[in-house]
Image (cartoon, rainbow, N blue to C red):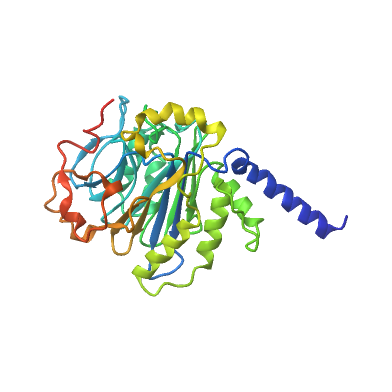
Length: 368
C-alpha cells in the first residue's frame, strides 16, 4: 500500500473511532446542546445556543443586579462574592443558571458533558458549586482572560440536584466582546481550559480535543448529518467558517441563528430505547406534562456582545424575545427581576417592562 493510501486509511479510521462516541446509540440524544460564537470579524461578536432536551426544563429569564452578595456553595469553604456587574440569565428549574450575558458583553453557557469526576481535586481554594458557575463568571468578570486567571484558584465542584437539567454533568463556553473565547472542562478531576479565538464551538461529550481531531480529518464536502455531538461540532465549525462578513449586528444575529439551526433537533423525534430509563426517571420533574414531546431543541438564545442584548426563542414561538441590556438601569436596580412562562410569550418589543421583582435571590423560588 502506498503512503498516500495508507494516510487516507489512517485518517478514516481515526474519524470513525471519534464518531463512535456520538453516533452509536446517541444519534437522537435526550440530553444535548450546542453553542457557537461568530467572532472572526472585527465589527460584530454574536453567540448562538441550542438547548436540546426532552422538555424545556421550565426556563425563567432573570435580571440579576449589581451589589448582590452571594455564597456559591453549601461547603464550609464556600466562595462568596458581591456582584460587580448586572446580567440577564436563563435559570432552569429555579436552581441552575444555564447561561447569560452581563452588561460588559461577557457571555457564558453551561451544557451537558460527562459523568466522569466533575470536581476539581488538584486545586485548594474556595469551593464553587456548579449551579453558581455561570453566576460567578458573569457577576465578577469583564473578559475571558479574567475568568481564566480566576478559575485557576477556585475549587469548582459539581453538585447533583434531583431535577432534570441541573445535573453535575456540565462544561462551560465563555465569550467576550473582543472575540476572545474559551471552553472549560472538568474531566477526571482536573481542570482543562481551551483558550483562544479558535475555540468557538461547543457541543457535548467527548472532550473538546476529540472534537477538534474529528473536525481536522472531516471533509466539508461530506459533512455528517446525524445529531451526535461530534457531528454537530463538525457541521457548526464548517458553517461558521463559511459565513460571509455581516454588514451589521442585525445581519450577524441572522447569520448565527442560521448556523445554530443546522445543529437543531426537530421536535417529535422518538426517544432512543437506551434513553427510556433516563426519561422515565426525570420526566416527573416537568411541571407541565404536556411539554414532554420527545427530544427537541426546545429553546434557543442569541447574545450580542458588542451591543449587549439577549434574545430568547421558544420552540412554540415564531420570533425571539429581546432583552436590551442598555435599557436596564443597573444603577437603580436593587432586586432580582424575573419573567415566567417564557415558552409561551410571543414577540414583544417592550419585554424589559414586563419583568417583575422577585423576593430574595435568584434561587429563592426553588422547592426541594
